[in-house]
Length: 289
Image (cartoon, rainbow, N blue to C red; front, side):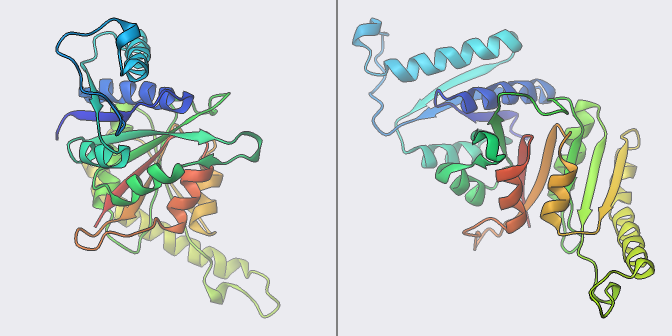
């Protein structure tokens, strides 16, 4: 554990939402909060701060001051570091992510169409960082679950997900909330009749098998967290819609991204793609082997 949470600062409303979320998370983890702004054209910082009218980094300093004020209003005793980096934002944030337990970024709400813009920078960071990344939206109204809603994790049963489950269980335990585990699965072909309809008995058998597999996968984690309430849900539909339909009142949605150290994926999978653009709550993307 590095006991550092880094959040990107760029002066936008979504960045402010990310800063406030990161401050709350740093309090829960008893970690330091690092406010980071990167721009290739940042001027060298003088030994003695000049008057504002002569400050070549006036706007970055103003952004940092606003971020610091927002954090102090919510968490006055939180340890905060302010970092201005004269580098490309992608390079600076990727380096910072490797030195942090968590990287937090803002993503833009597109309003009535009900989707969010992750942006090219956020997309590249999610794909290439080896640390969990949390994407926080700036919204006109808070989601039903609010910041203290249940933690929800989307779980595939076809590959190891130790890092994903560790993050989800720890997040729920820190907050003292229920962990909702959702497994989405297509109905098998034998559950459909010749006319294209669903055979109820076959569909229930498939769902029962999935529930047993999910329970078996979670049993070791229940033993590690005996006081944590776990709500197991099997949804017999495509994983992406299953997660989105279940996330309306969640406080945090956790999803996994397969990561290979030698051959990192150049794109996120369709499930992660769907939730980072459409989920109504903060989304944590956790890389795992």
